[in-house]
Length: 291
Image (tube, rainbow, N blue to C red; front, side, top):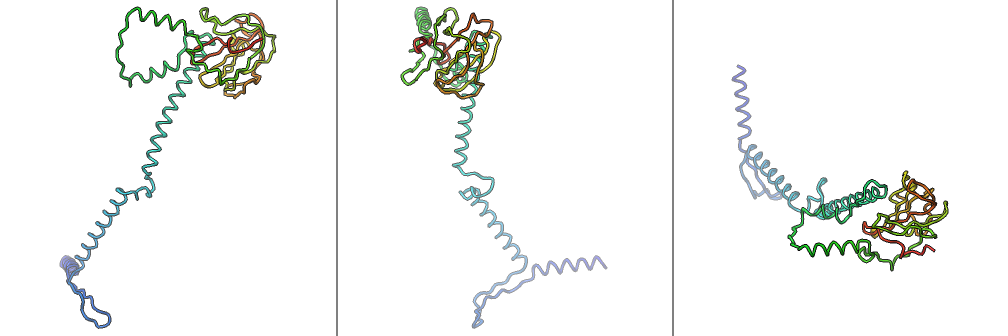
């Protein structure tokens, strides 16, 4: 009985879906028939489903293939994407430049502290990083050219012109006043001037800049290194006391330390003063008046 009853209910349900209905559209005033058609519930369901699918497909197409997608949370505009790519490249280049600077300063620090005698120049670092992307052409040179080139490079290694030290726009301040007891002598690895002064004499910064090194060592006592920009670095050694720490900014002529006789390499009260340009030590004597 139950099986027969269930079959009848299913048949009635199907009949309801397929039962035809007449839809009439007539005038409200005269009841004149304007439009009529026959349909059933199943056809109505199919039409509504098809309409929904078309509407959804159209909406998705508009959102994903037009500028309207920029209004949808999670999507960015093409301008923002372009700017993001630019900022990413800029950040990457800044990170590389910062890495080169840190390696360069660390190299100078190692030379000044006596750990090594070789300086890693920024130009060399940049060239080694980019050599894989450069198409080099082999250039053949004879022995005479190589000898002449090496001679000229050695002669001009500490030359101001080669290092492009522009002094016209620089107002250098003498770090101290006193007698020069040992001159700049790169052939004997003395890349500085030793200036005779009493212990406790104020030591001044030659230009404005940023302190990149402020430490004490057994060999050289209190040491200060200042980056003045334009690849100019000044070094002050054998101080009895320093007034600045790393990352401090200083002004030209500002007192940064007091001279002394600190360190095992010191032979008496004096200031050991070095000047570097483009990673190469140069003779500061022509640029300053120490008298």
